[in-house]
Image 1 (cartoon, one colour):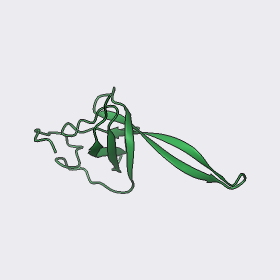
Image 2: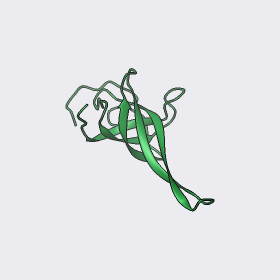
Image 3: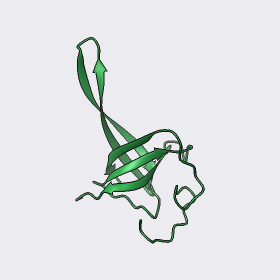
Length: 101
């Protein structure tokens, strides 16, 4: 981790928010909003009628703490937390791989 001073109360490492529930790995597709990133998660689902699999994509808004600072193109791990805002229920916990973008 970066040795940056983190004063974010919604940081799972330095703050007082608890991690619970689901954990996903996805790619950051947008980092335009303040302290928020949009993470894209690809998955497959089975369609019984056609006996085939369908590829789907989900875009999840996640809180981006000061000490992590995920950027567009990064592969990140996000964990579920209590609701932070109207749309955010996930927080970036670590960067698995830095992107080129």
